[in-house]
Length: 143
Image (cartoon, rainbow, N blue to C red):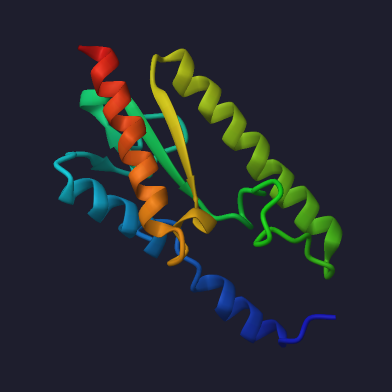
């Protein structure tokens, strides 16, 4: 049984953003501060990546652990209420993610996924440094 009435649940769900989320903003601001220039939510690419680094032919998806079923993550837990609906919805999200990543790779794009849990305050800096090192390595290999 849901702890909210239908109207409250509907309102709460309507507040969930799909673009310019706090995790996306953290990654974008970090990249910009370190000299990376990018485009956001490029609709012409499969999956409308959150961040596109055209110079590096790299896209970054900043995924919520729940919505994209982050395996082994404490922030992904199967909902107990309306389980059939959520299973169908979340598995469809995961399948779509996999298809879009495959399409991007076939087009020659490198794909990096940053998970919401990697942007929690206690590991934020090390996660962003890891991302920076990945991008540096890509840049070095492209020279």
